[in-house]
Image (tube, rainbow, N blue to C red; front, side):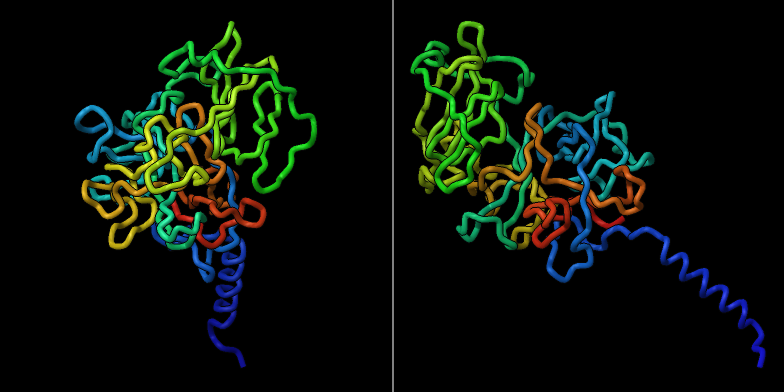
Length: 358
């Protein structure tokens, strides 16, 4: 028996099913700063690298210098004018918009002048496991004083208090010629002239730093848990400087030991650091203020990502291409991919969502 409208209904259902099959995935429904759990719907999403020159920046809207009033952004991709881009991600509250939201062309903070905020993404090891756990809060920790970030990556410079001391203590040592190994307690300091120093230590720096000059040749340094390792490029000259300063409450073997910095306070959560995940009743996107429970806590090292001048390292931050167009844009979700997924590019448990639903 013919039912009026039945054919029309069938066509509608067929069209709806086709739309569902070809429509792209939707943006995540989870809030900014939340951590990925085992039953979440975004588990297994493929992640792609963010555009080159992605960094962290702030809009200086009040007293000169970075302070509690300044909104902070994950500034994605370069901007020739030094201003906020469309689709930059807000990491803090601004006016009536929340952290995790993205800048649009109609927003009042579009095309605003910004300055890079030297900072790292790290976590507080609140359980003392020395590993990043599900309950460990994550922070954008700004670095007030890090001399090497103010210099071009290709320049040689001397940041020691006494340049004469910089040139003393070197001796010749044959470079290591074997293959790089992975063994507890052993490591290889690799310098840019391909000199390899085989040592009984764990290397913390992903790449060497240019920290001085000797007779026109650059001196590079690689930091380890036990010592700093210096090398004069183009020679076999090496100097090993054991760590002398250890952060209060930590041992020399602690990755977060203060010997990595001239001032151990640089490793402490400080005022105006930004919570990228919640810490108790302190919510993601808020800044640390005086007398907060997490102020002056020691951050874990090495960091997940760094935004220190030319030493920017965003390998642990990626985006899911929601609309499948092959570029980062408004609909795409941003994640801190630590720990990394099976292919180091898949959303996995304990990843932090750095953008919110649109």
